[in-house]
Image 1 (cartoon, rainbow, N blue to C red):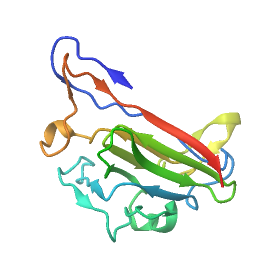
Image 2: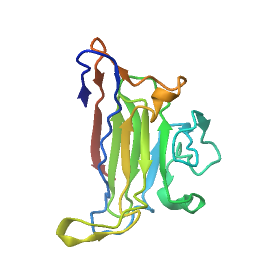
Image 3: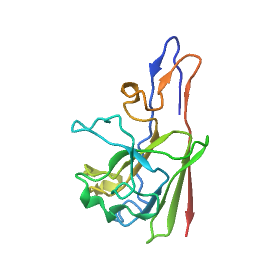
Length: 180
């Protein structure tokens, strides 16, 4: 993804919002899928669902996906499922982001990106008609949205999302798929 500021500085934070269900769109929910996210911190939200400005550890919380485990293993501890920004650990240009494994189909998705963060969303508000008229239920898919830190313009401790004519926005992501 790319964005240019033509004549003055502006905030830019692009993200893709693809829904993934590695078992196929009629296979049910993704709660039994294993996921590993390479992030030891999140940016928590306030009651208005805006980032507080804190960067807090995930250890011993429902957000701890440093070791692969089922998406749904602790989801009931959260009101409304997952919809949170993870601060990625690696400082590499192209860094590991997440691995998702659907044990039933054996399909594995590996995500890498140049962005500093990823939003995990478990589609808790999903009740939409989709492919072939199939109605998708909450947690029928998940999104992994590589991005900058949300609301970074209001939190100087977050990585900057300001783009200038001399410093364009660029971020790439790479999805690779395999069978185990």
